[in-house]
Length: 244
Image 1: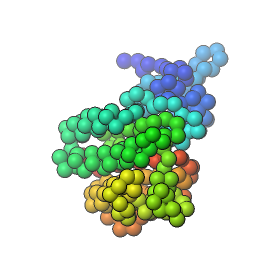
Image 2: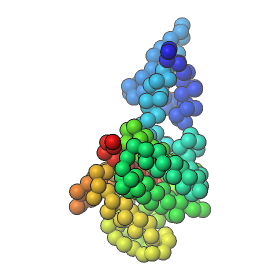
Image 3: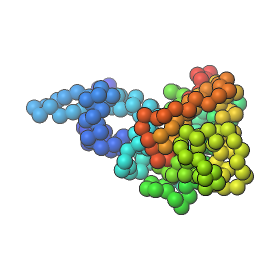
Image 4: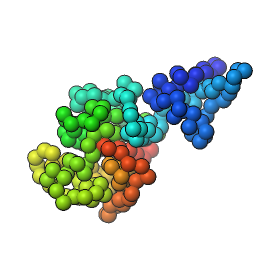
């Protein structure tokens, strides 16, 4: 069957990005296009777009980095905690068909903890778009979550007024039990996430502000670095090993 062709405008809507962004991606070779017609208009093959949509980490990063964003594609947007929980259950069900129950439980727990943190610590204080980005590709073994919230530094400074940078805030959030009360409990949740990642065949990329963390199985220490770009909220990419 012949591959369907899409215009640049149609693709902009599908990927929730601007036409100018798509032109930059074309110039950088990030998303394949070809020219057709007397004016050399850009066209995209549906199969290329379908493949790109599997790269949920790229879509999440594009959304959280852009200065002025709109709501993500409805299939990847959880405006409320109830929507997030329903989609998390759907993800758990899909993953259960291809993965052992212990893997399913752990991945779901990590994603649930990160997503719930976003709602717990931004409720009523979302800078622009409320809710979170949540998408996954079981084929690529990736889960992506992102929010355009206040970020960990702002959250933890309410009780740790001496914190001065995002890298300090990440370290505290992933290593120290702060309190059982909100908003301080955010650090407790990410400490739980760390305990799962380091004991299992998973990896986690986590960014807040201008600092990021890469965590994998067996890591005793935290590898925190200066991020290439700065974001106001948080971005998390979970990757798990191949499943039977």
